[in-house]
Image (cartoon, rainbow, N blue to C red; front, side, top):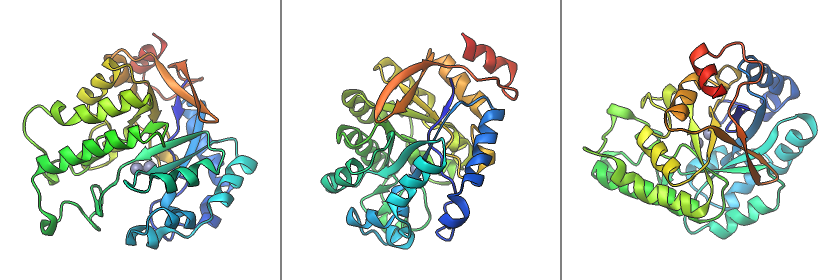
Length: 294
Ligand SMILES: [Zn+2]
Ligand SMILES: [Zn+2]
């Protein structure tokens, strides 16, 4: 089986309205793209901060700009009008664990994708509120150290099923600073937290579409996860139908190279493993189909 669990049904602009994007016709476009690429299992994981209920968790000005929609209407739409698994991409907000838990436990999600986009008030992957601003200038090493500690803390919080894009801090690639040398020293606390918590790590092709130009996470991070017995959830983080399963041949090569043969499948926040393999795939190159079949 192939999965794509980290999907958004609309672009990130705050004017992208549910009336236009949360429709069966739009979901059909995602499903059609998945079918072409042999991806049987699809789930949607809208950003928690698009929903007014998120303001009970955190009142960052970015969240206040985006929180327009009703979370329960989203859940009802996915359950009643689509055949998608119901997920959500929830940010880890240190100190707000109880409020996040209340929001998540009140709904019947199939899985929760846990993300760290912000460190305190600074975003690692946006120009707005950027943690990289000179006014907040810190060494790259300090930002990376704090980032991967936050990933470990997020995992240990027990709030999430999947650690999303776990080295998002590299988002800007060479356009921002990257620490020198072997990066595994930064990854360690994150991988430890993910392994201890027993959650899955996401392999996301989104980094290939960003300045970083790499899969999330880097090969060394993925290897450390595999060595620690962490299972993998495969996703594209698509925000439009054409990106569903984008660059999966690259992801399947990476998984094959580190010896991963199974992917996580989620239902009702229970996880099982399924052998990797495209369903009636027409678009995957021969090499990765072979890899998937092994
Ligand atoms: Zn994200
Ligand atoms: Zn996302």
